[in-house]
Length: 490
Image (spheres, helix red, strand yellow):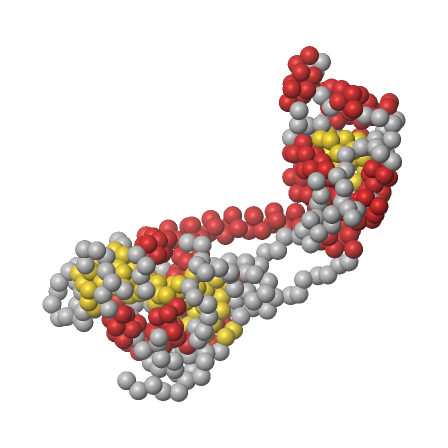
């Protein structure tokens, strides 16, 4: 087979907007906003030695179907209301594979125009165009001219079976295979080349098509291949995976995993006409799952966007409040006073978190002395004794009375500001002469009547709680960096 010249396929991806930059404390808050990109920020590729890259081969000319498709590229042939390639992508997304490269060739523009960047399907799609036909293996080699070691998942774009990709990958790695194939049994293999599979799971031989109607195992057009196999393929040369590459790997190099049906290949007019009938139930299941997934994903994205918006508004409206509270806490520490904290439920955990950051340190690159901060939410003996003998409303107030002194600070965390135990603790602190700070939800500052309030601009309990963590970190770091200079460790 003679190689012919072919340029490296053109790569088409998605441009991402640069991240917004802010300065000072507002930047610290904004850095906690949710990022929806699925890839790493540096080069868009996942990290790690065990990365699996996914390619779908959809560059074939489909000459046998041209009379049926009237010029439509084979991957866009409609089966049960959607192009065949779309069903393949929906199935990949359902299995957690949303970052896919489509290897296109014949009428590549039509495929790229239809799928775009994949956002409509909840995926990230890239394209590797063949300038000239390269076959299944040649297309893989051209799409991956170089890269890190790892496993590549390859699927034909004109066939479908409900493959268990996780099982295929697990058996591939367990057996240390250089390549693995998903196999399906058929009653009549006259239209396909067969595969001889040994009892140990290794493929013994690849058989050509036979005119005899005999049952057997065939390749479903789903492959796992290790990077060294791709590197051994000659570049810019038309090659077939099953005819030129896999048979040359030898015994105990190519592993076969047998799955069930159904299976369809739309390579001929007859098989294309039968595809809808064969896959009707499977594609109906996929469509229902996809619709459900899109609904769940839309809800989750909206929910995360609400959280990000709340944090954004907090950066705009609460920065001055955070600085004011940090100044009060820092002044108390400098005069030998301490910080007490209380709250209920998730707020109790936040109190422990903040106390731990002050007693230990927030940033290891900013060493300082330990700071006296006590969460009143941790001693179960005190909490249960007071709750049993006096009433739960007094669990924090009794501790404030026992530990608080004039000049100390009480920080209460309450999304609603209505908790009786928190309100009683505030009353006890005022009687002693302590300064009070509230980390609260919208409207709660008025109810708590604290001296200094950091009021998250939202009344939804979950959204308020989600905004607390960046506030707490910024509060601690502001105290460390700006109001305790002399407390830094030598």
